[in-house]
Image (cartoon, rainbow, N blue to C red; front, side):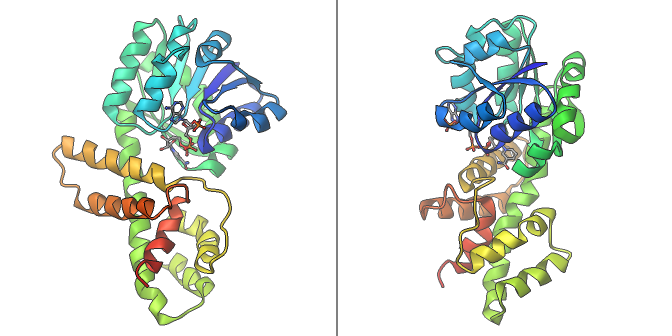
Length: 294
Ligand code: NAP
């Protein structure tokens, strides 16, 4: 199948690489063009604009930061919706508020194409291996059309309901993870006073009931950071953590929920951004907060 991917950040690039691996003809577009090179080396073609991407593909996947990025890529000059989109399928995998997704779906349908949202749980490694958790929202016929593609990217795809329900479920499943990074920072601020080596400390934490999968998977990275060494590439940035936590607070409050723990985590993440950590991996929060004020 001819699949286009617009947005070649950490996740979009991993998704495009996975789609090439499983045999699709993949075409890509990104705002800054330096990110396409490794994918071209792997067999992708590059479209000159989002409109050209839509012209040349049956299905287009978007994986972008937020609502304004979606506006720019779908509706800006040379945007996806100015291409030949009739009867084509658009799958937006970005993490955005339900309302952004619902409004975008109406615009895509208005242009004569089909739309599903499918934000995902899991980061770049699961994306590369086709092991994400897909949270789809869309009309049943559109969801059925998108499912075979999403099943090549995900270990499990849940059709949550109409557009907006996948976005809401994604925010919900991600919330404990984001709050936990702040909690680990506060926990390590206490634990470090005991004076153990970082490796011993993480070995103990991953054995405890409070250890989530993200802590287990990033334990080595956290040891590296606690030892003051470079942990390598960012898979999920603290800047995107701020964006997600803000969206969680706004979405929860719109539903009448008291979001006090999420707000506290948000203020911790904002503090890390103010101190120049926006491009660092989210797991850096566990180290940044433990070291803060020492
Ligand atoms: P990222 O590495 O920061 O990439 C963001 C992408 O959005 C880049 O391609 C960027 O283009 C593009 N973009 C941003 N603003 C734009 C604009 N105004 N116009 C056009 N393009 C724009 O982020 P990511 O980690 O891949 O995350 C992408 C989405 O997936 C986010 O919604 C995030 O919350 C979600 N997500 C991330 C993870 C993860 O582990 N990383 C996991 C699940 C979901 P440039 O390259 O030109 O900047």
